[in-house]
Amino acid sequence: MSIRPAVTAALLWLLTVATAPAQEAVANFGPPDAPQLILRSTTDIAVFGPVIDAYLATRAGLGIRYEQWGSNGLYDLTDSDCAAGRAGADLVISSGVHQMVRLVNDACALAHR
Image (cartoon, rainbow, N blue to C red):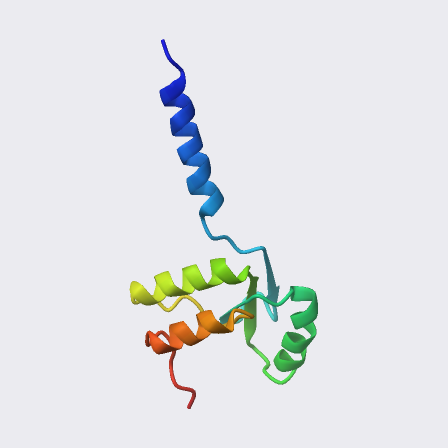
């Protein structure tokens, strides 16, 4: 009996899991029971956290769920959300400018009003 099929299946499973996009970290700001905006970014939470705190100081009753991503994972998730017609995040900020430009050109962004 060969174990080759089992090893092949295990390797395929590992490749699938290893390439699935996942956020690196998550932080919630503001009151826990407040309506939340979802902000996805490539910037470290420690760097962007004070900006969020300053913003929320002027917006009582609002919360922000901040998800820190790698640029490729963030692009893949945002592109998938767009293709499926889902509004995954309220704001996406990435260091991958070429990826952000592509999302805008693919009509995955809304105009600011």
